Image 1 (spheres, rainbow, N blue to C red):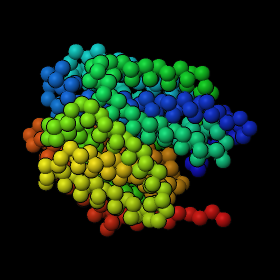
Image 2 (image 1 turned 90 degrees about the vertical axis):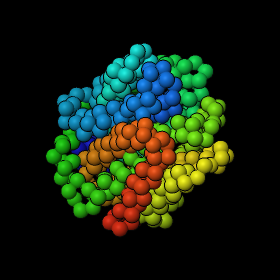
Image 3 (image 1 turned 135 degrees about the vertical axis):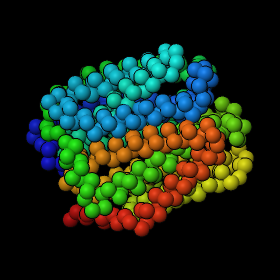
Image 4 (image 1 turned 60 degrees about the horizontal axis):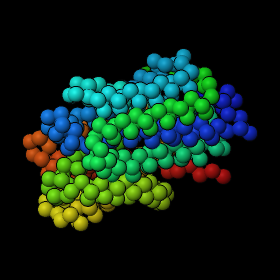
Length: 400
């Protein structure tokens, strides 16, 4: 456990874990991740109404990710004297404001402004979420509490894309973002009612993160993780235009395919534990390699709708194991500096999302989905080769 967190000073005693507060944190994660990926399911109508290209609309994802990356690195230093309860409430307030800005944006400028605010909320919340959760429950309940927090991510993966695209077709994409703001209101209210005061208990500096980064194997691992997440998000951000344009799917079919992706992604997180138990290195290598094969297969062929739906679902299953595998690698590689390393990984993922959406948008506007998927496959294949050759994860520590 990170030495900066002393459970004798936490808000929860051994007899009174703050489970309501944990649920409120999970709801916050659900709202943030849902808002983060809504543009991926609403790219086509956003671009049409604002009279911009789909590649330009994809930069809404880029803006969120870039700011989220910076926020994840800076927030613990900038807010080292701030009550963590107040920080969590502030991030939920930003979630509400950002969604409303997007919902009523007349053009690209306000759209990006809203997504920038979301980036601050997302990066800051994620950087603090694990540390705050560890202070809400006694040590023996931490794994259960963290699993509840990450269930918010799985739920958002299942709900955001298919429900966003379906409701966007029924009521308009602006209504979807208003509903997302409502979800933020629910998160804010529950956090206000349940989160205890949480005085600062240490801060992570950028210097500490840099010291972790230069440790043997850490820099290569972070680079490989960046490539894997970047390859995935380039694929995922432009999946709807591919299904509509290249495959000829209607909105109901797109929603169904994205729902299948989300459910498979959730199942992948469950299967990940078994795979990692056999071999963490194999899991880290095999997932991006198989995802690359899918990207190349979609590019090289003109798949029918059933086949495209099947391989997209398979992609969701494979990617479900990726965050779990990289979190496990982090815990085994840097157990003594988990908070600093965690900030690095969050920043790397946000950078990957930004690059995947930004570069993918440029490629999409010139070469279409085929060009994006080819680039995605190349990046994923390069990551898999680098992991296989250069990464040597530590084995799990057995507890007697």
